[in-house]
Amino acid sequence: MQYFDREYLGRPLWEIDRPQPEFVRLEEAGEIRGRVLDVGCGTGENTIWFAGRGHESWGIDFSANAIARARSKAAERGSSATFREANALSLGALGERFDTVTDSGLFHTLLDKHRAPYSESLRAVLRPGGRFFLLCFSEEEPSSWGGPRRISAHELTTTFDDGWRREWIRPARYDVRLPGVEGKAWLGAFTRR
Ligand SMILES: C[S@@+](CC[C@H](N)C(=O)[O-])C[C@H]1O[C@@H](n2cnc3c(N)ncnc32)[C@H](O)[C@@H]1O
Image (cartoon, rainbow, N blue to C red; front, top):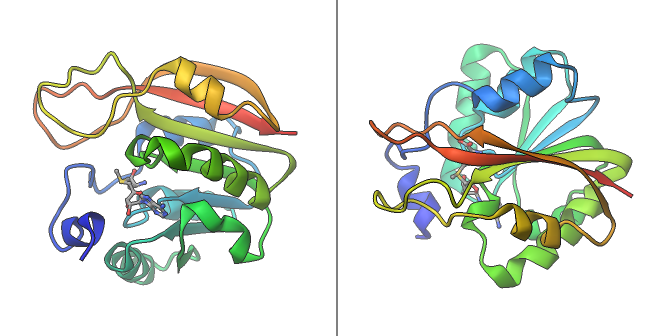
């Protein structure tokens, strides 16, 4: 069983049982538009939040346990969110197009060699002019407690370069359930050319 599937048998540290506040604020500011795809959705809090705000909202994750839990949450809450088991590196296989794609905590789990394929995969499901928002741990977050890789703003700009226009990258927070962890993060916005 792979790492994420095992984690989802319990309650991983990133399970905060509510959407990430950065994505709530983005949606409330009108930045999340049209059909939304939440990549690496986990158990679906962000996906379900977007659906509740009137978006046609899809979540994909390669963990079968995460998707099973996301579907049962959506059913319990009467949410219209759609969940699929899929790999973020081959999103074109979904055969769908979206206006907005979000990544809450997936990018910082990727190996270096998967960054360029991920960028291409995202482009395959975003309509031209559509936007990609990404939230990942930044190099400002201390490594003392472990957790995923820390990412620099430079790494984001070099990964989402070809075929993208960088809109902005802002200091942000990625909430986790660990006392004392600030969750210093980057929130980035990129438009698909
Ligand atoms: C840190 S968790 C974040 C989950 C959720 N987005 C959140 O904010 O609570 C990262 C998620 O990305 C998923 N993931 C990692 N690599 C993936 C890949 N190549 N394809 C699909 N999902 C992936 C994991 O299974 C996990 O659910």
